[in-house]
Image (cartoon, rainbow, N blue to C red; front, side, top):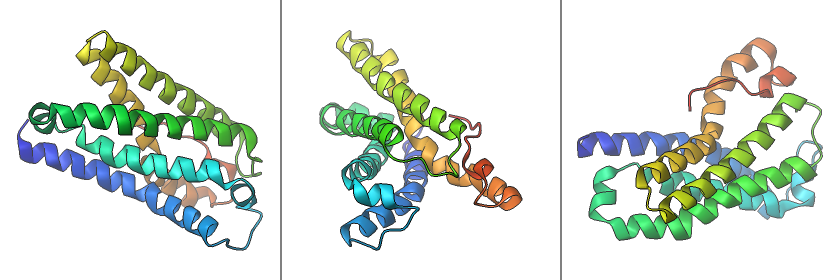
Length: 190
């Protein structure tokens, strides 16, 4: 793969990461500004730490993770790759997965969020955390191809939030935004 194509892939991942990051930034801004509480965001305003951890962790994980898809960068700067993995991506990825699980378990579920959405959040959170742990086990065994495969799986699950905007638009147009079908998980390629 040539260097230009590698950078196009990273740029595409960054653009995909920015879609949910904008919504997350608005949410964190509302929390920081102590915005008026509405029924839609009461759960976030009452317990803001999990959502802030989730949003900041996701932004860091998505942006730094995009650069791990550059083989030339990894080869030339192996020290950076290892540092970013150990001290940035693993903690950020686990923060995203675990805070997502915590919010799913303890935040009040809005009526628009159906059971399918709740179950999918549990599945994604557990799998993302498990994939990161399996990646760590693989690298400790010096099984680098397996390590990369597990990290790609974890990153793909995390990036699913960016694809939700693309997959939700047709359902929102057909069923409206207040339908449980507008927020239910739909299959997409990981």
